[in-house]
Image (cartoon, rainbow, N blue to C red; front, top):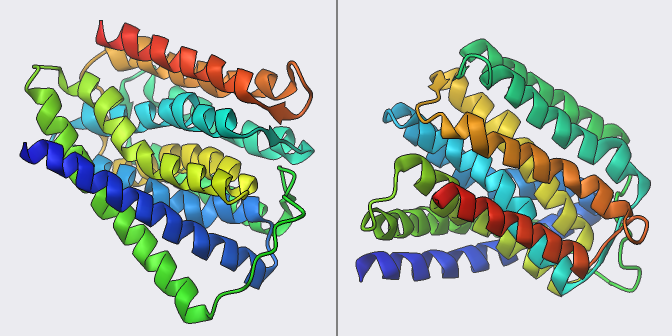
Length: 312
């Protein structure tokens, strides 16, 4: 019963946190005259990736490297197969050129960099973590200086700027609520899952990763409801980049991460690469530069197949 209450309390905190974070992100884009997708890929992405960072560092330091790795790999799969799917089922997203010239290629490069570092020796070393963090820094510099919107903004949305103290307050409360909500959710979900005797890697790649992806889901659904689709798409792609380069990069700088369960290398990592790759053709087929409900159903189908194969 206690675990169930943790899950419910965590969900409520995550929904509130997603709303507060979105308010501050939209207001920051207004104040700084920065495209909303850039705010989504930096401020919102970092805040919604904070649960993965905390979970991964704690897991690695406590001697559970598969929990750290499975959490990030599973979260990246869930962000696209579950969160993006739900987002585009609720409402289509029109995509601009910079999505396939910058955002998606960087996500794929980050995924391939991680694959290259860990696949052949099963260890993410300290120098590899430093390389990943440096790559993230260079990407952010490029993003803030040169990035143009990758999604058609809603022209009819009129946003009113908030006082600065409210923007900072919403940003802080949002990040704190997302972190606290995720901690509660993970505690409850892992407590419920261990009753069924599921292995550490499977818990990480399914239950924990979905738990830490709920901030992205909450932020993205609220973004769609409020017609802030640019933040919705930018948040998800940015979160996947942050998860790999920042979360695993910072974690491996603190302590090298070693694969324990080979299923991560023989199964999970290929699902992550595959679902990241398939986003590009889905953007062009059947209707150019658009993600719609059909694409969402395909992504959900891929995610369910991944969960079924992983558990069985």
